Image 1 (cartoon, rainbow, N blue to C red):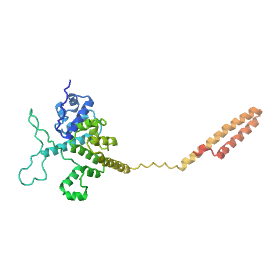
Image 2: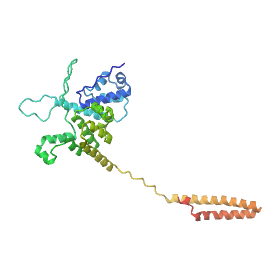
Image 3: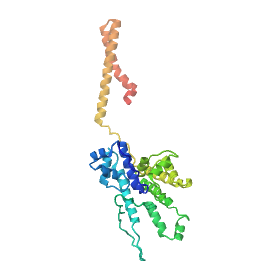
Image 4: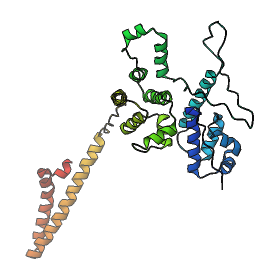
Length: 335
């Protein structure tokens, strides 16, 4: 019996923990052990287990082999985005843990991304910093504007209480912008995917895999999902209106810019086809007249025992039927 996996470290970065949790759930759903997965992915079981441990960011090649080995046939860009987010957050965290310059001179504006050293084997690692990494995307631009402008200037261009999330939502123009602000909200609240799953049970249980798929996807969330997400993130009810307004605005813009498919025009009718159709109609009328004429002649011959009377009636009916049908202008020919 396989040993249960160790819990993902509580101090793991949100994006790193999301990637590890998604890899674990994918492997469980495939019913493969790490040894079985190693045989099809061409990576060792130790490397695959480390990739899903949440203690670091694995290489993309390992993640790709892990996913393909589990039989995943969906869009690989979802996993690529999760891995890129984990790499970016780990880089930001390692830069934040770099010792500050103790001299009196001002520090430079750029710092090298120095990896956080790992503890020697057998020793406990230092706990991760409690401060969450700074947000990225639109929220980061708004925060940078707030930090670099005097408060009196902010009061002239914004409300007295500057709401970074409100401003970031107002700047959203695509579904990816909204999803980015949603991820920033999770980071800003210092939450994890596991916490979101646990809190959602009070309203409607949403799995961690669903949270991961939506937050790292490309489509706007549904109204129900967004309501549950904002509630468990602690957003006040009056502040949820701007979220729903933003999602509705982008949905309408997407529908308006969707290309209109014009109906294909009917192929023009040529004179040759019209002539052929007319000829077919005339032949059909002639055959119908002949059949009815022969029938009328036979009935007359049976009644009168006269061949001449039967022939005369048959010829007369045969000659009269086609003009009569054309004069009646049957609807079947007009269709």
